[in-house]
Length: 295
Ligand code: HSE
Image (cartoon, rainbow, N blue to C red; front, side, top):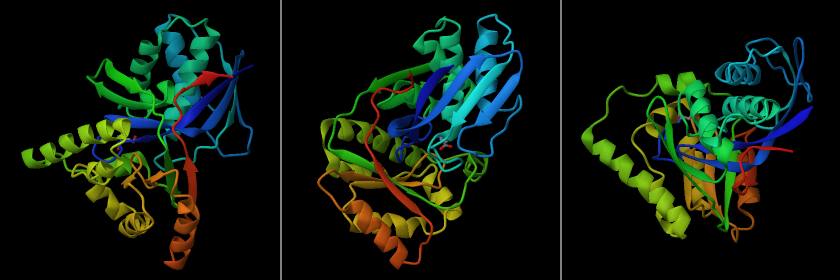
């Protein structure tokens, strides 16, 4: 069996809706080998689809098809550390694991660019799949067929603190609440901030991040689906976060924090409890600069 390690990802980064994403230092693991049947199991007892609807299986089969090969069947063993439907790229991790694993099993016929394109076509947007494959912070434009992307490695003294509620929010629901049209003014509001985000992150101008994470395309609408969202932002800023945003489609809230802000995580946990916001989990991570690998 080969073993694939895929990072969690955080998409949008505030204003960069469907365009910006970064990889985090915590991982799902998937073991795969060709088989004459579908044999899918979970190493940690998690309830996952065990038939041909399993996303890892679907992605692997798609890759075989692109390469003109019929997939005989597949044995897949999943270890899922990335919580599902929380805005941390769990479905992208499955797609990327399936593609990377199948490509490896076939002797790597597809290039990294091919994998980035295929993953975005399956997922519909590239801002989780591209950083999951590539690592670092990725700026990506998906024109419907191809992804035009830049990966930048990030070596900062920043930590990314995930504040994860105890409820799920499906991406379809979080996209369905968005308006179909926005004003010219709001478009400018977002594009300027999205550009400011990556430039500030990469040059160390962290004081800009609080402005850069604001947006008018998705967060104001999604906040209504996430109880306590505004309060959690306030608490994060009280404890010195540079910026806080809804990770991907939510409901996880991400706080960007200086490494020297030593007790941020503990203070956050304590304040959430004190405010009666129960059951949320707080963890901190560095950026993963490597992306998906066979281990
Ligand atoms: N950019 C996507 C969204 C990420 O916000 O809906 C979640 O898949």
